[in-house]
Image (tube, rainbow, N blue to C red; front, side, top):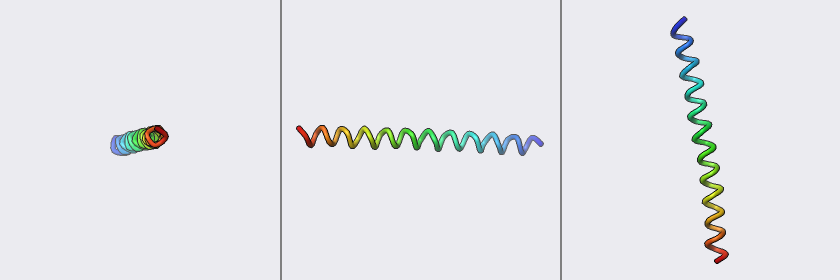
Length: 42
């Protein structure tokens, strides 16, 4: 029983880490494209 609890806990942790990394990546890409547009405009 402990093993299944530990596995699900790791699954949730992995999903949270991947989700957070995805959000940061999207935000970074969006900010990066915005700054590139600002640099190109100036």
